[in-house]
Length: 177
Image 1 (spheres, rainbow, N blue to C red):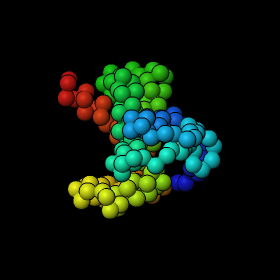
Image 2 (tube, rainbow, N blue to C red; image 1 turned 90 degrees about the horizontal axis):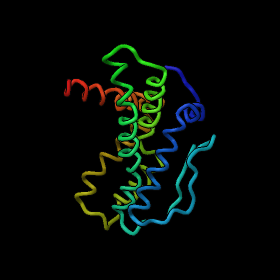
Image 3 (cartoon, helix red, strand yellow; image 1 turned 30 degrees about the horizontal axis):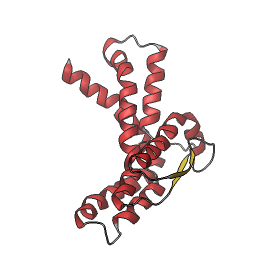
Image 4 (cartoon, one colour; image 1 turned 180 degrees about the vertical axis):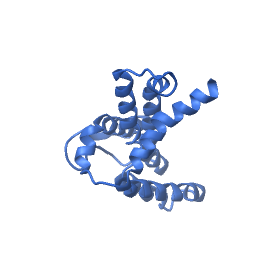
């Protein structure tokens, strides 16, 4: 393994950062939580952010924090799907196919919520008003978020991005072919 500074990864995969922040903002709007400030991309740490008011319900904060997982994974897979078919089946990919694969991987690898997102989710989970069922379900999920966040030094986010952008289309192709 080799180390590449985070800001370089963010520059190379900037579409994923933009979609990640858009997903937070989208879930804020879905739950009628006012957004105070948004930065879709910048060179620095963090590479993007959404500042919002405290949601009315703890469940809303959980969904806002998890939003990028669902949105980035879905968009990454959908963007890569038309390119994955020629790359995996027909053997005649074009430069556009490779650009779509890069775009899908870039977006999907930013699916994992950040440690800041995990902290916000955890604060909502451990609140005394949160139901015991939500606590049981969300506690291991928060642990996985931290694991994947720290695992980014071992390229877990890139592995996830490739799995979503190429693995899901591969499975679909094999199921439907």
